[in-house]
Amino acid sequence: MNGSLFVNFPFIVVALLLALGFYTIGFKRNLIKVVIGVEILEGAVNMFIVALGYVKGGYAPIYTQAPQEAVGKMVLPTPQALTLTSIVIGVAVTALMLAFAVNIYRHYGTLDVTRVRRLRG
Amino acid sequence: MTTTIIKTTTRLLAPLILVFGSYIILHGHLTPGGGFQGGAVFASGLILLIVANVRDKVQELFEKTPLTQLESLGALGFLGIGLLGLMSYTFLKNAIANSGFLFGGTTPQGINPGYLNTGGTLSYLNIFVGTKVLAGLTSIILIFFLILRRERDEW
Amino acid sequence: MRKALGLFAFLAFVLFLFAAAISLRPFGEPPHAEMDSYFIEHAQEEASANNVVTSVVFDYRGFDTLGEATVLFTAVSGVLMALRHYGGKEK
Image (cartoon, rainbow over the protein chains, first blue to last red):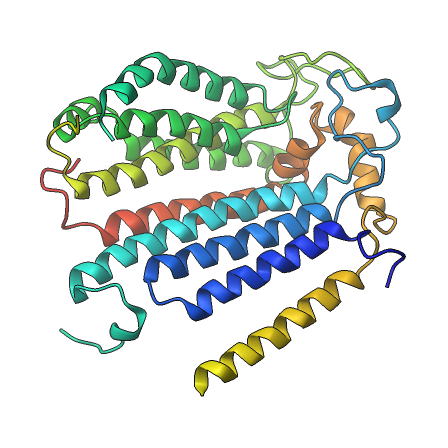
């Protein structure tokens, strides 16, 4: 344990979002709700990557009209760059999942996960 | 969602959103933002235009815009700028910075108000990636809208 | 029976997640990063941009951005291919 329990508050929020995402994927029967669960998981992972690069009392890593004491204490810029890529890939995966959900509905007539298992047609 | 309130709001709001998205793309090397973020904002302006109209009007608005060609132009432009650095350096090297070409000024060290003439290959890559992202996101929503077949206004 | 077993496994996993979140490195004190110090110091003279994050994305790590642009292109073409037959007089 590190001091009081609320020093790592962003990490506790990330763990909560991960638990919500896994619950929605594993215990819901509608296909659109499963897609929403995957999106919640992707948001939690992006938040974790950004929260890893914070320096206490740091400023944004931009030199345009920054305050005078920001030159030496800047937040690490590399996790923010990796999160940009991750967000765009999440958008692409969600678009493909929704297109396949439309196709499943046209083929089977239902969106229930327990009833689209048989390879028909 | 083709009610009267949304149609009136779209007529006032959509040009402002498009201008704001272009500002974010162009000033990517000075303020927070860049190619991907500005492309997403520009695509939201176009998606607002798609959502607020019935199907025939959307087809009339979007038949002339070459969305797939814009996306291919963005991808090929990225590769072309990357091959530009291959002449005497490595692939994707910033060969335009600190030279005399269109976006190639020098940045003073330390804290300064931003100058638009700097950036090197960063500014060109911002424009190409912004074009690619807006064409891609708009064509995804357009193909989902054409399935829905909204024929008449709602009320 | 199966649902009770699934719920029990899920609760054990959630407890593991909270225990891991509490015992991480304290928030706000990253280990000493030499690469990021180099990026912050030399971004204005090598990439001539005020924005250090954009210079990392497009100049120092431009190859990852090329891969991501390819992923976006593939996903858009995949969506347009999967929904081919619908839409009547589509564009």
